Image 1 (cartoon, rainbow, N blue to C red):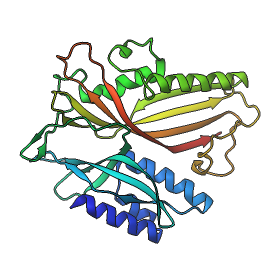
Image 2 (cartoon, rainbow, N blue to C red; image 1 turned 180 degrees about the vertical axis):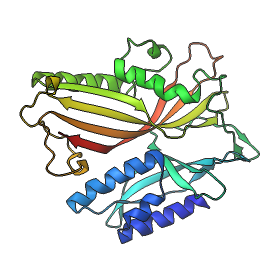
Image 3 (cartoon, one colour; image 1 turned 30 degrees about the vertical axis):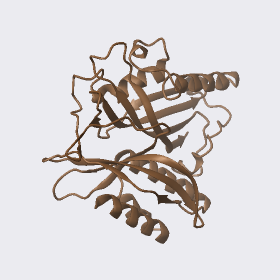
Image 4 (spheres, rainbow, N blue to C red; image 1 turned 45 degrees about the vertical axis):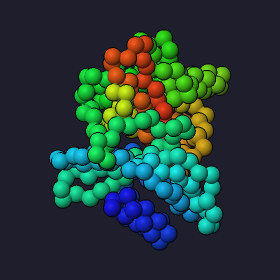
Length: 291
């Protein structure tokens, strides 16, 4: 079973310090997040954390063609020195692109609330096409619509179909506040939640909606106005190890980008006054540059 193989092999490779093999087990958003985490921890000599998993629940679509994929809901805790930390409900998406390919972990996200009720047929979950027009938003545009709210706030027309909350209007408010703080130091600050070349996955819900899983980039830049050279701009915490070289100094600008894995509840188009709810997110630093 692909899930158990991943759990076993990832622990083995982390324990032996074989980051290359550990990265072979992941793809897309999971790869970007893991690579950034490995680089950051290696720079400080900190051991890469392992995880302790509880009892998984599997949601496997009955697919006859490739790519194939499935989702796992599992309680997971970070383990340090043999002792687990707090348990977090976690969604993990695995996929296999071709018959000759291997299963990889495509994305992982923590979910605070209960998982919505998913449709099951003879023990199988039901895959939803990414261009399904019976939903409020096609799954392949959920991320872009969320991004419009994060980038421009509740005044953007997309806010009429995206629920307010920590992962939408809350992200906008936090980024806007950061921009105001940088402006007080005579610096500019921009942010952009944007699409990434990661697969989008969707499972049918019992009410006709869909649970949509997708990855995104949050790109931020702190800069001297007009990129005129000035005093060094501080690199955000967690991003110094991701710079291409320790000699990089932000005389002009500092770029700090995150990779996010999201999960959203996309209601049926027939539901009155419905909005898409972003119900899960995990973001980690994945790229840094100063110049």
